[in-house]
Length: 73
Image (cartoon, rainbow, N blue to C red):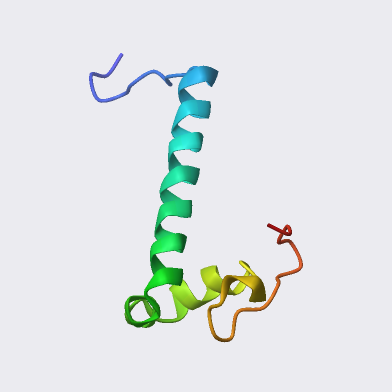
């Protein structure tokens, strides 16, 4: 067996769920930061604008629209 080949590693479900929860918290933090500071959001360009677009018009961000997959907040 070659030394360069590694066996696949299974990530435990509880660890994956914890990382997903942490990612969602970070996402929400940045969205709130951008909503509170539109000038900073504009620096993020189209990618940030697309993220904020699915937040919805209730966010107060100019040009924000509800996306087809967005949930009411």
